Image (tube, rainbow, N blue to C red; front, side):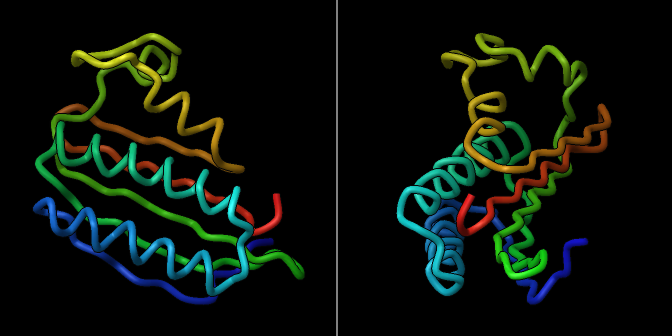
Length: 137
């Protein structure tokens, strides 16, 4: 069972908000004594997801939570946008798939960086991506 110990919401509407969000995620990761390698993985995943949110949905919001399971703490990030949605999540989760001019490593690469990854999307309504990275895992 995972318990939420604290929750913070960051609105992401302009480029300065992206910097603020990444700094806030780093602060939370440091606070729970997450190792440097896991901090880097979490921040890389968060950077990819916030970039997608800005590019495809003109922003959104991110919930930052400190969670606990037994003696282990982690950071859960939930990115919520009201963009066009993803018509084919299975395709979007394949390496090499891209709707833009990128390498297509975004969502599957992000999933590999974290311990838990969940994506829900409805065309015309938006997308929610939740990731979790444990401090030591």
